[in-house]
Image (tube, rainbow over all chains, first blue to last red; front, side, top):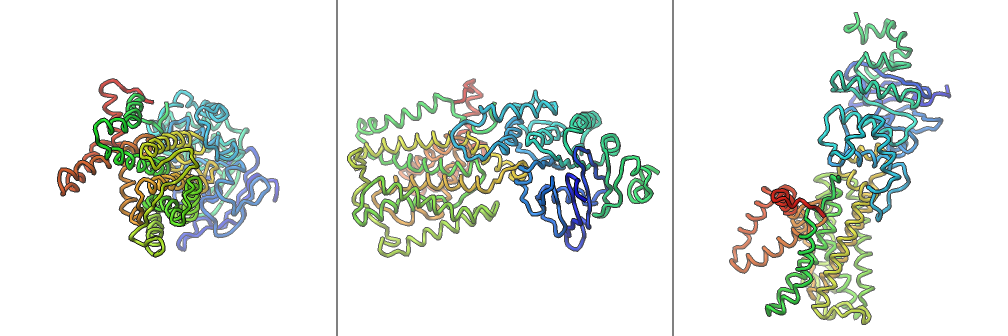
Length: 250
Length: 324
């Protein structure tokens, strides 16, 4: 049982009589890229929100790096090394790109009850932030206001912020949602570069991306994991074909 | 480079403004119009309160509809000791700051659990509790108020019974408050407050326990406003609970928004416009509320970012885009 980096057991979440997360078991191994696929409404985002600590589960347990985090608040999970990106872009839009990422660095650089020194001139914050921005190809946009950027760039910024917290586990909620072909390819490239370095749990609708990137895939249907395996195994799984891939692959 | 915290006003405008305030008493004497000193004293004291409110409202997105309560607490922190013959200014101002901070801590701890309209309502409700508390204490005059017969004494360091001295004491306080708020909003702490205004959920996701930072800013803001209240008590010599009425809190919000929320000097400009318009319009006609309201509405509609935003726009137009 133990050994998995992220271990979800019997996780349960009920929304008005409907099981959004229906006794989910999930193991994410260290440094693998684990993808979760499933039709719309399968409860993917609900699952991630429980893992990141924003939505409290109704039952079950979550273990992360050997520690039970089921009732740990979101900010503390982040401090433990768990970072998430949001499906619907979630940024400080009135701040610059660099400020957004600097804040992510700052959150992990001790407490922020520091009232005197100008944060923008602290190289301790700015340098790691710039590094994270360059790693997603946004180095040039550092001083632009986040609001002024394109959707695709917002997604990249999301990843940069998650990276700036120096996470050991990245929860990525549809990083390619709403992206054009070119932007998607750039994102695939970014994720490929992170592979092996970070453990990642990826929710994505873009099947090409998922099957290219993932080491293992879990299929979520109506809140339940119906299969887990390598891309090859999932592609050939009968239940998966019927439940999900059916109309696309067949 | 920075997206937030623009002071907006060109540096020279700021310098001109401060020089004007510094020279005003001389001007008043020369013009044989001592009343001007009183007018600008009130203006500067309310400006300190507005700057304190701006810290949480403009930078932190917390619309406190009860900030005038701290003015009352600060004023009574001078008035009540004076009632018992204690005129030590250090003590009075310490009480004003600490009592305001304590009240902000308790009410903020509850109010910050809510958001939006609920936050506004709850801060207003707490302020009304403070208001009615002072109304109900007969010993200190109830709603008739309390006369402060002697102003705070600072052990011979300075004598604010002299209006000129009080004037420069208040001006120095205003400058110090602006400097303090400037440092705070640019610090790590300030970044957290602004980030939390922009997207609190995200801030938590990247690892900030935002609640405690927001609460701390709320306490700082309340403490500064309490200090302004102590100045106000000294200035008016006659204090009533009515100074903390919810209408007064609304006026403070108006001053901040009018001048430009989230800019350093905006609240000062807003307060100046508010106080001066109120003063001079009411001399022209007893129906001054009507043109007053109309002008305020026009400013809010036609200048995004308040008066400060208007200056910035004008500055850009005539090529004086310099920012301080």
